[in-house]
Image 1 (tube, rainbow, N blue to C red):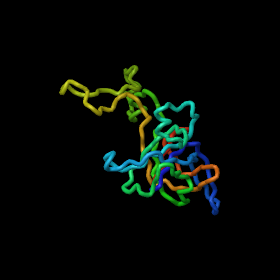
Image 2: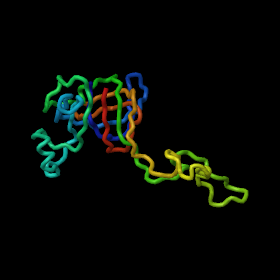
Image 3: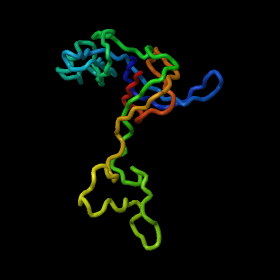
Image 4: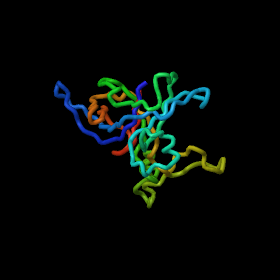
Length: 202
């Protein structure tokens, strides 16, 4: 299994050998350092915990410094579950060069936060009539239920917080890899805005 953590840089275009334009998203992916190996006997499941995206050591508290075991100071800690962890040891580094051009990966991240939004923007409601005696109903949701059961049902589509949801996009093609700069170019759009933490795995 291949796994790495990156930070979304932005979108651009790449020309291939045929002169065709491919839209890509650039992700800066520092080496992920293995911090802990989770086992079935001790933790109840098997997984590999990694840290990535370095930050200043002065901003790391004592408990996390002890957990990092002198391997570095990391801003992001993630786990990926794997059936066999024998190939990993604490301190190992997982680089972006582990991926190759042509790989199809799964990308996970948080979508852009939109704040509190109404039903028209959040769910695509058409709103109320704009004429024939109606006033101030253009973006209202309308009726939200009948007499029974005298409460708002769970899951009712209404106004509320929009965005900031974790989503996973599958079958994203690796178009180009710059191992020296630690940047990977993935075809198409990825979730979130620039600076969003992105998880890439196969």
